[in-house]
Length: 356
View 1 (cartoon, rainbow, N blue to C red):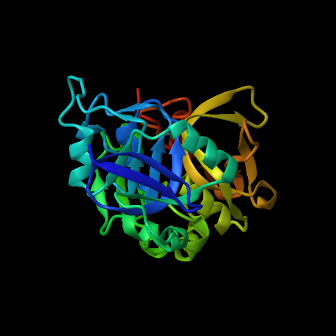
View 2 (cartoon, helix red, strand yellow; view 1 turned 180 degrees about the vertical axis):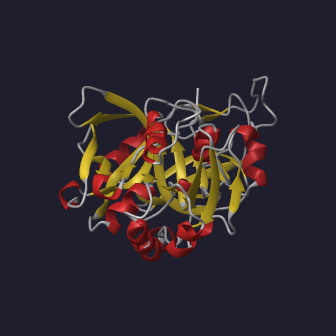
View 3 (cartoon, one colour; view 1 turned 90 degrees about the horizontal axis):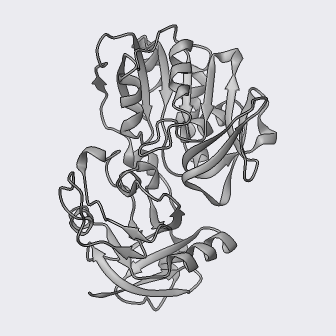
């Protein structure tokens, strides 16, 4: 196999082998701890602008199954310890190498992903390059920044997705980089879902007379999406609202709160979330590098916190008939601990969930 290098912005170099697209790539290097679900990870639009490192050592063993995709590939590169070039699964359509080649995403394998993960945990997220030639100058890597990514991953025109069975409610989903399983979770509860681009004015969404508004996940710094924040401010109190991940952060900003970049974020399917005032801790899937600053939350009530670091994981806005969560209740391939939040949204809209 051809040599490849992972070059970090501090000058650290890891040598491995190339697979996927034969092209250099620069991005923000982040790690995810999921043991399964690499297809959902690679097709999650929230990874736009980032090079994704999998902490689980063997990746690609069940191949590529397009029905499991969550969206279009937005990640800029892929780092694994061992890439399986002979997948075995009855649903497998082709292998990971072909998948990355067809989408222009370079990969590197054979590197010590454990050592790289420990470095990121100690030093914080940093930029990196996947390349076949070690650069003489680190300037390109150090200057890179993840900006404008919501505009890159959002849909271009509205699209309607019919309910499964009888239509109980009509939901407007604002797409900041929405995962497909959000739509599926709503559809199977009897919702007709109209997906709107992120740049849609609040007036246009309200003119469609939805029973509720869903704010999706998405990539990047929430604070740079000033138009989206302004539209959410216009929607609050006008219609029941449920926000996930970036939608959670944007709502907090619209309500006067603040967000901050985390040292290395939460990415994986094993993040424990504790419900304030409750008796349960839920295991959740997460993918975010920014968090709502708890002390800045004035308009709402914090409902969930991360059991590891105490960061804000969910806010209720009873005055506006709205609530948001930082984690992914629609998680696919799991866990499913918090899928009941979609039923809560149905109740807010006055509809009975048809999900069984």
